[in-house]
Length: 267
Ligand SMILES: C[S@@+](CC[C@H](N)C(=O)[O-])C[C@H]1O[C@@H](n2cnc3c(N)ncnc32)[C@H](O)[C@@H]1O
Image (cartoon, rainbow, N blue to C red; front, side, top):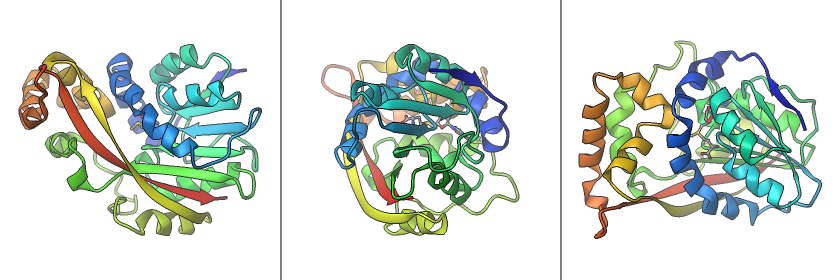
């Protein structure tokens, strides 16, 4: 299948260079989320030959599972460098750089549309979900995944630490709700014209074998290393390590339990 590099704008322009700054280090975390993708796939019927679009597909960990089930993988992401990794893993996929708020696909195309921890990077999440629903076939499932309740996420300490470095939302962007609160995803999906079907939570753990891997892995997401800058990178890495020291395992590694919240909605 084809691999296209398109133009990017909006939230993709803001996030693409940041998310794409350290693809291999980001893959250290994304690849550990496979059990959470399996959990989602167990709840929808995916048949060989069906067309699946993953929005904000990153390095392609989910799309690899799609190919393994003989379905056809389509991915879009703001970052060309993350897609370069995804192309190696999903050589038969159709992988494009683009913006989730303006998807480059025809109406009613896909049998399943997913967004794992990606939709909330849109300037307007309702607009992004409306696009997801537009390109899904009528009645097809749209899987929306977000972080679960803060107190159930060991990564919360690290997120608190880096939040002040995150780029501000555009002045005209709608306010961000707390997506983990019961009913919030359902409300947003409904506003986007989707029909919420069922929500569920799943817990799993990121594991890093040593201090150095933890530091590298945790300044990769969302371009944290770029945002803090070279002068402060080590300082922030050390602060992250200190914030997570209680999750150290007897062998010197780290185990961080987290929760994702999912909504399966229908187009
Ligand atoms: C938290 S990562 C999730 C990656 C992968 N889906 C996963 O499960 O780990 C968020 C992804 O959304 C992408 N992204 C952010 N804003 C985007 C936009 N406006 N359009 C398309 N992709 C976007 C980023 O480049 C990044 O790959």
